[in-house]
Amino acid sequence: MIGRTGSPLQSAQSSPRVTKAIREDFIRKLTELRDAMLDHAKHEEYNDFSKLGQELSPGELENMGRAAKLAVAIAPTRPHPGVESQVANLLAGPFAAMLDRARDAIVGKG
View 1: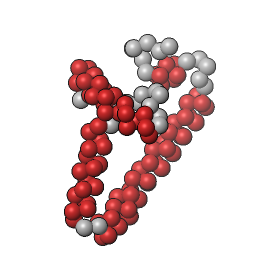
View 2: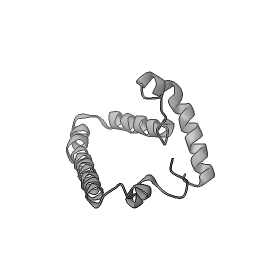
View 3: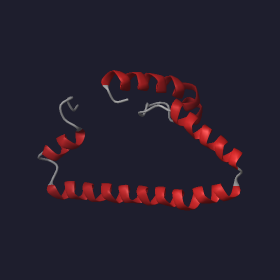
View 4: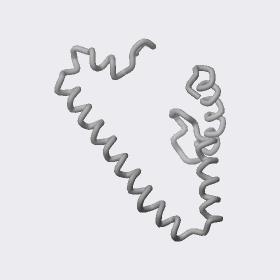
């Protein structure tokens, strides 16, 4: 188990079992993931959202915006093992979100 003083990445980087080649491969793959996510987000912003703006009424767009804000407000801020299914998320998600936000406020992350 990793102590509170170091992150898993810091521990892996200082581990004698993690070679320079493994670290470089990890950084390369992480960079590829980041780039793919940014490309996906740009595609949504420029293609999908503009199509929604053309095809939906202002009222429908406002409703979608409110629904998105509500989803963010009731979603947990960190993963919770055992709450992977849609039903579990609907039942436990708001409570987990409340606990997460309380924790975030206490430790100064909110």
